[in-house]
Length: 278
Image (cartoon, rainbow, N blue to C red; front, side, top):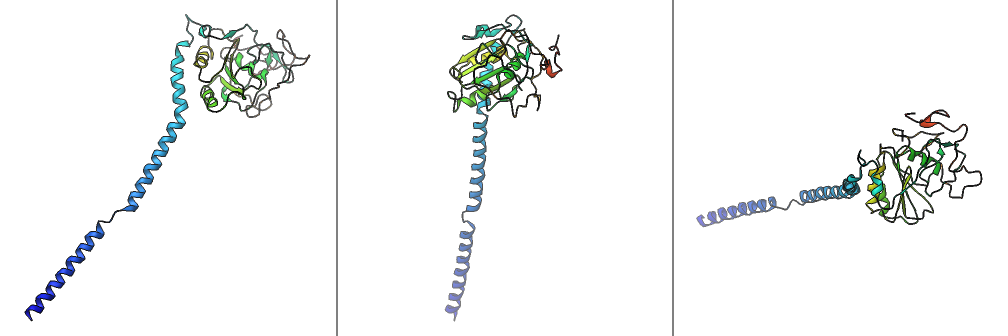
């Protein structure tokens, strides 16, 4: 009897111990659900960081280019730093000579960078135009202190486009557009000045912008003039007047033209409105 009782007690104790061991083993199982959740969150965060770094890279790179070109900003002692930029062409043009929206000008340069122009300026508030825009409107914006980046869409492609856009987007008194038939990949225009280049990596792009955009030292006719959108019926940036690649006809206005009767006045005013400051 004693032996039988002892055997039963031993069996019971073994069963309890085995049950405890199973409980401990079960409690130590790997929490795969938690691990997978953490991995997913970390991957998402890494993806966001990588996307931000990639998306902000053009802006960060442009900030470095702007800083490098800061030495070309105009000063009282150096009113036109563009004179020190190799390749810049300079010409003298008379400002404030307007034509009608139905008229053309026989410009002496391509792209033009001065001369008679439409009474309505092209919106130049850091706009990147996806299609080519009528010359006569773009030239008016140059008269207001704008820098216009034109590019040959057959020669400038791929990552060169974002490089140019980074110089323009969100920056007042700048604009950009394709220019079919351009004899160089890239051409920069300000009033009376032009620089043609082969690559969007060229630091002279930033030097030109630093030297001439809203330069207050008399390098363009209408200091303080607006670049804002004029709107439908005048100049609508969402549907701008199209560029005409054909050669101007005999009725085109010459470079020494004195202006059309009834043409829009300065600053969007009535015909004959004098420019700002006059």
